[in-house]
Image 1 (spheres, one colour):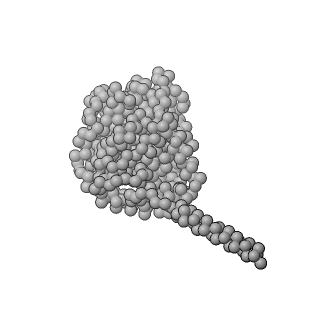
Image 2 (tube, one colour; image 1 turned 90 degrees about the horizontal axis):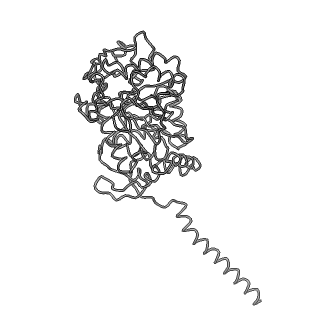
Image 3 (tube, one colour; image 1 turned 90 degrees about the vertical axis):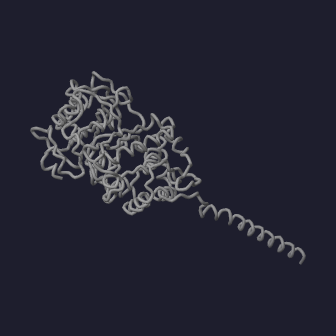
Length: 443
């Protein structure tokens, strides 16, 4: 991209704040000539938010007026044309600053003249980056005063903690104590985050594809969360650019892994109809959805590729690209963002009504609504590894878009039929023995 050549802090594969770019004498660049990128939105090019204010305009504001779904959305020509695994640059810690919303974010919010808090936090992080023991990403997420995540709140993963109401006066101290020394910021008390946190790139002023794909994904996530009663257990919110424009919709899910360590998994090319599978399979069962998986926090690009190869071998799958192509064709034919819930999502027999399925996922509710649904996912994944036959059956259902009711297995049918045959043989043998005994006595 031409932008990269003109801006030394720009990195097409990094987060919106480009923490992996080489430090320069002037890392804060006010001007960002986005016109060179045909998919970038020049709207708000130099920052349009009011000075010093926290505006709370709605998430679904018209920040994608530059193009529709066919050109920039889920029906665009480039959608699902690239391999995803290994497209996340290595990092070990993700910091989210809650600040306003996508409707008012300029393309380079870390460099916007009037957005003082993100600009100063970015500058402080860049200045102390060489002193940090962990490679750190800094991303902006939506903040609303008076809600769970207010403006100025800071979320840190994998630490799973939140600091409340950071101000521009506290930036240097916060970076020094928390990000450099790995300690606590004394003016604030860290709060423990529980459950799963989902972030969806919706930075429309930075890239139109994110502006078109992000809002429908967030709406679908919230719809599914409400439908299954998962409020307070699964949180979803928009975030600024995380890198990989062409993979929109981009989603990051933070939560406990099978060994109860907090992980951050990245997904790309996510469409609204994929949301139930991410909730059911990734959050509910702790299983990675490989055909949408970009990578993971804490792994290098090469480690991400090898990790997926190993998973596919264990799961009896050999070609994730083939599976992705098949499901892409299915999604294009039925691009329905309504609440269609198929059998492979819910694991039960559903009664069809036209093209939609009307059964409710009580299994997902039971799993995630339990006191520690991450432990449930851990147990389910452990049991999955113990039985290769169960694993193959389960993964086969997850990798297909068919809707079917479970049929008796070959072993079950064999047991029923051959039990009677065995009894008949035993009875015949007994009859022959009795007849032979009688014959001997008669002689």
